[in-house]
Length: 132
Image 1: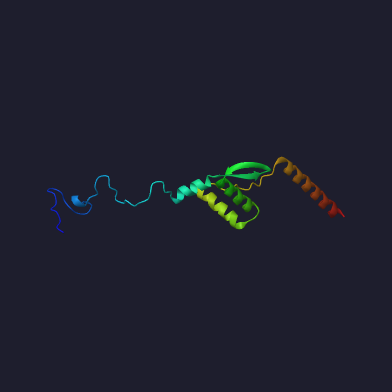
Image 2: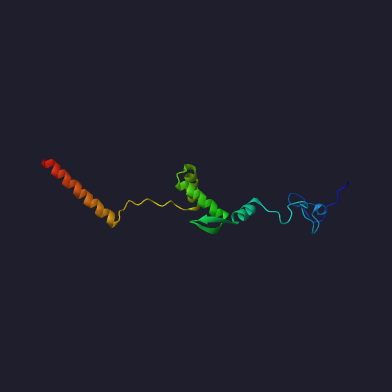
């Protein structure tokens, strides 16, 4: 089969196919490609996680998304002492920029008063025992 001569003034090379081998107008380069309406993994995952489920929360029926239900289960397992769940929860939190709450060692007014009374009692017990 003989190749037709190139058109005058048209270079043939990388990224410049000959005119006779170019796609015709309206013809796809991949006619058997992905069909319209085909879903990718991300779309399927988002749809699945946004589905609603009915759960019992504090004795009441509530409708929440599956994603919210999964997070509730993960947090509950971590709170019960499941080390793997706690590790996953902390890892997720660090990925999205949520930091775990820091423990505060500050005492409120009532706790401070109780501790002072206890210290006074202990110091008076020590002084009475040293006199004996």
